[in-house]
Length: 142
Image (cartoon, rainbow, N blue to C red; front, side, top):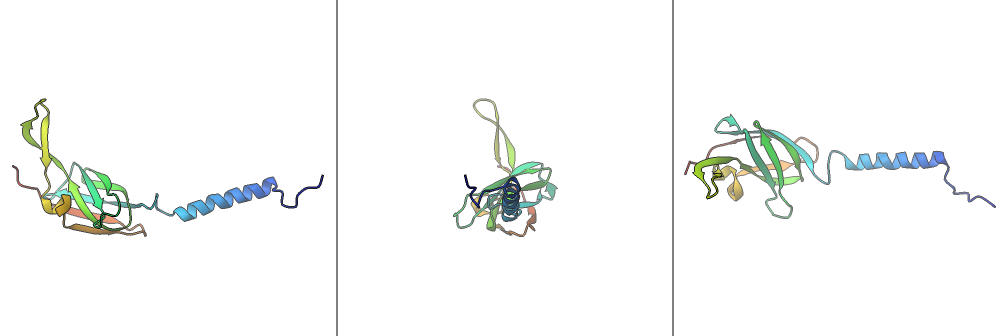
């Protein structure tokens, strides 16, 4: 029986596997499914936000929002590239209780920094230099 001239040897199989592996790494770069690392700090009335969330929203509403957690004034998560409206969300107890006795919460951040009215805009880039500092003010207590 004659061997096919295109039969793979163990050495050529290893070479092809390594080539494929490194091609995948090179193609992936710093992104994870088209998302890039974003990080930075968030203050509310000059103080680091202890707990909260950030939303990076596509102003054209063509992509889903990316959400990250704020802990001790810092955040780090992944976002799709392009222009993003930033929404800072920080819960604040109202002092009232629900029918079940649980505390009720409201948004602590002023509208110009939270929700659809946020005036905070950033450009998430693909080069990995996405570090931001957000300084927000509180909404009046109801």
